[in-house]
Length: 450
Ligand code: HEM
Image 1 (tube, protein in one colour):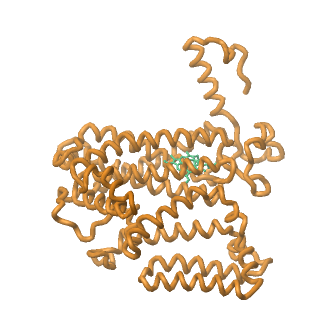
Image 2 (cartoon, protein in one colour; image 1 turned 90 degrees about the horizontal axis):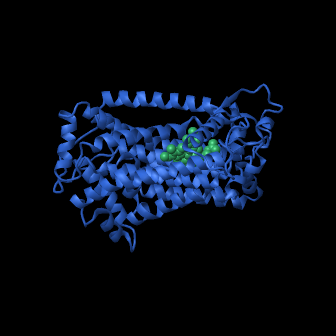
Image 3 (cartoon, protein in one colour; image 1 turned 120 degrees about the vertical axis):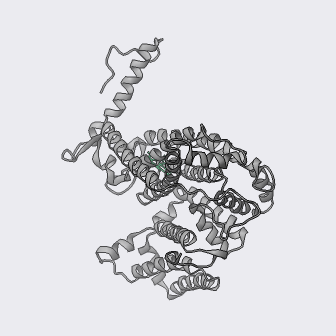
């Protein structure tokens, strides 16, 4: 759609009414652009980014209401939680909605990252948006972690203490960093105030700014990712004009941004109904008031850090708390900038390994050493994902070039696919074990046996 001639020229001085009309015109134009279903359809993104945005909106609105009742001081903070439960009308529902929506946001942000990764939507020109995304992932975790302390009950106090001791295991700077974060050497009133400021002001502002950049980049990079016929991403200067988009694919369904927005809002509303129902059925937990003299056994971190706690059970704090997380986070940041991992398929690897028996033996030895290390430290839960991935790789290695179906699919996966799959499987496994299967002194328990 062209700008109508009665629209003022951009360089003319405009009165506010003209300016609003202009913006309205541009906004409508943006929302009415026709786009192919393949680009905006549900299958492409499962609307996970939009759903994450939905949970963040719920967090901000319920968080603002909670701020009306909460004082970041001891013991008033805990008393306010009790008041929300017994005095404030719908207070318990408000608190529970904020809590379940926070969990949903962390879960959805991981799902969104995995979906973006498996679609390879991080490839140019979207590599910087991927970097903004990884920053959003970290900011989301920090936002959630800082909120965890505010109820000031045993769970939150000791969960935060565990997290702070992980930070202090960092060489050279750890102790100082922990001191700045807590405002002292222990989790106390200073820490509560600092976490309150971080949770209600600094991290929400960081997340809002990052989301603004994320969505602006999404628009600038040509909207949602869709590969061309060769499976390569379409670069911005190759993005066809709107008319060209439909040449040769006249029969394909089309969507407009307006329709997409409508669908995504329906999705967000459905999610809000689910979270609201959860808040009405299940109350957010509130333990006894924090008691620094009584350590619960086990003292567990929030669920998204129990995987890390599980690693701490096996490895020294410096390895589990610092080396591995730093490797994982830097690995996530550099994914789009190391095309080597994308270009090497399992088939290439197998061909390379088959060339000389020595190479196969090298790979086998590396896997055996890794397995032996995990068996030696009794890390059976970490061993299982490794063996599943190795089994699939062996299956691919034994698959002939002409094979069809699942085995061919396994053969054609890239090296980066396997690295991410192993990372996600390990994360799910360690988090589940840490959350459900660990009891006093971090011993193994069966959850159904109480
Ligand atoms: C608070 C967290 C986040 C929010 C609110 C958010 C929001 C969105 C939205 C609304 C979209 C449009 C597509 C969709 O609906 O799925 C999107 C796309 C995208 N996101 Fe996120 N996102 C977040 C975190 C992340 C993370 C953690 C990553 C990766 C590490 C990431 C990487 C991307 C990329 C590369 C795209 C473009 C994908 C495409 O072109 O299809 N985002 N995001």
